[in-house]
Image (cartoon, rainbow, N blue to C red; front, side, top):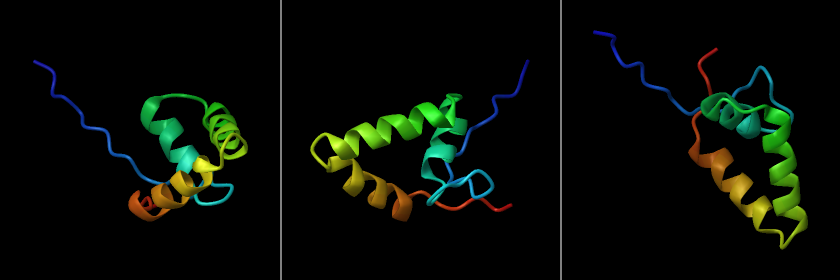
Length: 66
């Protein structure tokens, strides 16, 4: 029987542009980090809620240990 491997969400500092939030989310959900960054940019441009969400994610998501 295979052992289930747990994934952990963290900010990826090796692929970070600002805080590593988008790179970390991209790795966690197995999605290209560019798509995540575009989604954040759209959320910031449409209503500005994305900026607040990014800052909260930056504070809440722990940094990687690398």
